[in-house]
Length: 172
Length: 254
Image (tube, rainbow over all chains, first blue to last red; front, top):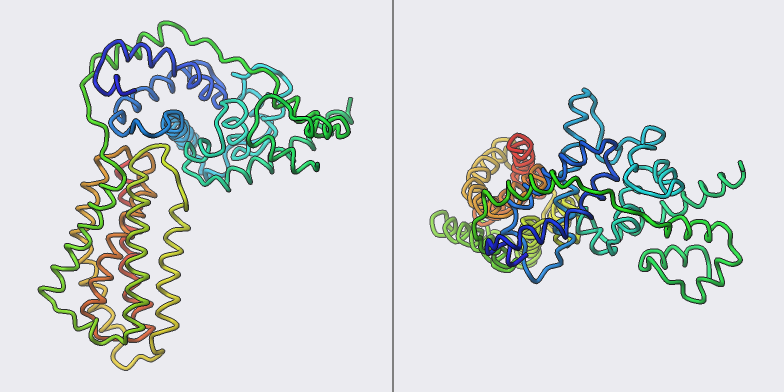
């Protein structure tokens, strides 16, 4: 990243190859269409490029990148909602059945179905912690939230997942 | 070990099961299924090479060396410097009749709340210039904490009376208070735009509240009306109005 800030051309390719796969997984897990995820990835990189001076070498890189990606996704979501002439608060991102495809970037059918049944704020935290592999602190930084709030959402999500898994077993 | 302990384990671990966790999972089917589901392998989808090269070309076209943003402390000091300069200027031109009208306890308590609020907001603002910074309090909670503390101190230490014309004196305070906030608001905006603003509306509200707080502190230097209703309504109105304006501007500018 320091080399990228110094405008070293080789660093650009290296960074894109290194960071794009987790970024794409992050975006594709939240957006249904692959084409949209690809557009968001490009938008994400443009914002990373514009904000590159704000990265401080003594700070962790992942939360910095995921915070930008998180905002790209939120802006995309709000834009889409405006187009659909609906007003929804951030905490009330779409839930339920229509989200079965939202996690289509993930392999593992069970996890995909389970995540689709979680409320959006809880699903976001589980995705960051368990799919993107962030720590509690990193997930809190990426979502401009506190560690306590992330932990609370994660624990509620785990409890709900237990219930969902139980009901699946019961129905089989 | 209880199921809640498994949640705590899941907070920190993604692979490798300690013995005590394994023992619990053997006896608890709900937790076992949860851990298995969360540890199931996830693969990242392939990115088409054309997309990657498009990104790379776009970045290369605009590749210039940049200096990393200066430290958080630098920006906190800059923001506090603007506030201090404003207060010294107001004291030099308008005097400190307000401070002289207060008792020592009122002076210390109100001064502490206003200064602590200013420092807290300055730290929060300078963190929000950088994506992925650590957040201790959400903006709404921070504004409530500062505003609530001010109200609490005024309600406890100022006399509950209103001897003069409430509205007329109030407007004589809120108007200049808003004017005092204008210079810090512009200065904070110039400082903040050096960072990356991800949430312009909430950042606008925070910056507006801080500018208003600087203005309200200026009012306390000069306002001789030591009455709880006056300070609670007309002095607090300054940061609240500025926060609303900052929020609206942030929404518009985004």
